[in-house]
Length: 399
Image (cartoon, rainbow, N blue to C red; front, side, top):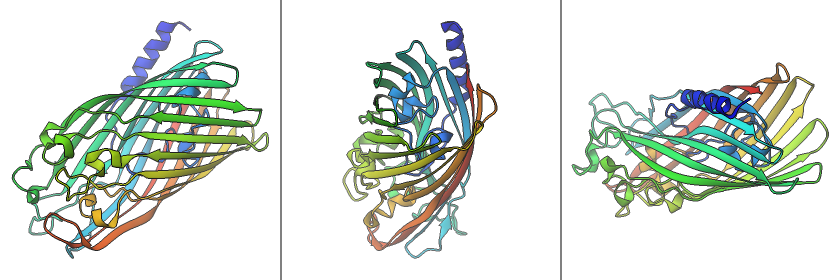
């Protein structure tokens, strides 16, 4: 197969996958995993080569993925609710999202692999309906909510420096979009009809994968903070005149082949939300933010090769909550408080070159409340909560 054919296939699949990703909140506003195989296994992926999602999981895995493409979609179903100042509990009207993802990989030699991954982050997508008098939870008018969507395209190159040690790199081409409504109570400086605004940025993800004997593999990935251009329409809402960068994040992983049929893997990841002022600053700061803390996430998964056609997976994802009680008010707009996910999935190998994978997961209900939360209108009772379910399918083709 010629390079031109590879390029044409990648371009066609990229077009399919490049619709702006709807928001989804799990580990803060990062998903609990990328690719349906990882999602069915608690999100574990750093020391594994599940599929062609090297650009987001671990760029080094592109050297092992071979020639394949993976395209999938998930239905993400979050339930969000909130109460402010003793109001009745209001539930967000947006509770189902279709989220596509795509990966493509080619092994150019025994040592060199290249690919491309298209994926999304997000987690700030709420729409609280108004009360009968048309006021909303924040004292504004009409529906209240925000929508943050991020699309990331990650071309990837990985090279085996030895038979057992591989390094990879993925430039990250980022486009994000934001919209807020119903915030009239924040004052005339914030245009309540600002509408959608967008920004762009360029980042990088670095990866390493090492095989320590026949049964153990280790991996690591790192992405420094991505400097995004500003949301000019929301310069008075976010810190640094509308700057909303993507936080630094890194992950470490280990996988162990317990038996020929059973594999156990674990990842640890950290997302440094507090280093981005628009995310980490308090609502009461001169340059306000959501007051999020850094998040630590532990992922544990098991994979069982049941027979030549069926592989089953299960996992748990346990993270810390970025939202503190004092910052409950502003986080009504972005209640990313989920701490625990339980997951299950599997793959059916239709043939040597075709796979169909599925995953289902449940994010256990969690809430944050404060009888005297900080707000621009003074201390008042605030509560917010979230739970979620999701499922997805992924088709994979080897060539």
